[in-house]
Length: 216
Length: 216
DNA sequence: ACCTGAACACCGTTCAAGT
DNA sequence: ACCTGAACACCGTTCAAGT
Image (tube, rainbow over all chains, first blue to last red; front, top):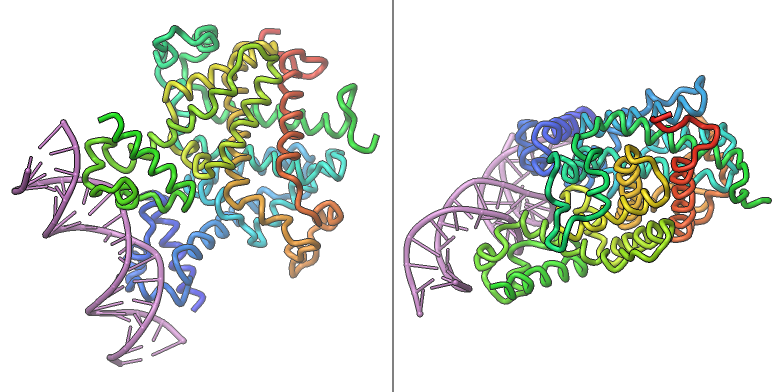
């Protein structure tokens, strides 16, 4: 039945949210649904398909950010913000999105919205698919870095001594020690990064002085 | 013993390279070393520590790309290329690097080299740590997208019909159908992305017209 | 100091069986 | 049509024991 499948997906998402992706097992999901592990198979067809379905479900969460009456800047900014929120509410999503290409209709809709925004910005057609990948790679990568621990390490300890190596202090860290002492506001930094990327997109659309687009 | 630990790490890396990260188990590693699973614990202290050590080992592979007699562009380009090669030779590395912040000395050395390159480019000090994270996030994210299947999906099938939805064709895809029909050369695309990012860095270093740096 | 073996609480998935 | 139960080949890790 259709209802059963939704119920199973709901349970899997709930477990991933509460206990992490590694706690999602056929057995734990079945327990939550109130059924035997084997009862899941006819409905979702195995662990791998379950994870695919979980990614598909999340793509739908980005759709509200796809609106047509916006400037390309608003469109890209809105999508990026929505994606970052998704990685915060469902940290496991960023992980899965990287290793399970989502071909669900809703995911394709999101890609298309980015295409449209880049075209509206005036980016030459041959550059659009590449910049879409660059944009989404950065947004997902940033979300994954926040969700996972990648950003936590470098600057967490004020005046950390990690750059004080046996052979002497590392020059870059030594020079920046004042700026490395406090943990940044990641949301703020994400916004600054997006502004820079939008500037990059605009430069592609209206090149001034730099290397010209392929056609010229 | 020290030798035993290296032997264990070698075995784990070999298994990950040949069979994938999910094939790395205490039991499979122990088998390869010719020992009982329990014999590993005194030397590497558990599965999680094993994975951390594997990431640490890979950081060393980036060190050859850290040379001081280069322009900042050569430095960043060389590091990015080395990182991409690492994700190709050891696809599991990108996955682990995102979820296990590497604080190994060699990883800090790489971060420091990026700091130095950005400073040499003339990037204002408060922007350097942010741009380092943006740069490394993009490079790792691109490697992970290549290693995992994220890039495979969107454009793999020529004139794919995924954008032909029930309610009609998606306008962005329809408009770009000529450019979406062939799979790009990912190395080439990566180079183009890097060039754009270096342009972004230069714009931060020598702002002309856009929003000025914080100090002004 | 280093390793083994049995055991415990987990996995995903198969297959035959029940209603 | 939908679910159960036993079984198989796996996990990481603990603990007591061997040399």
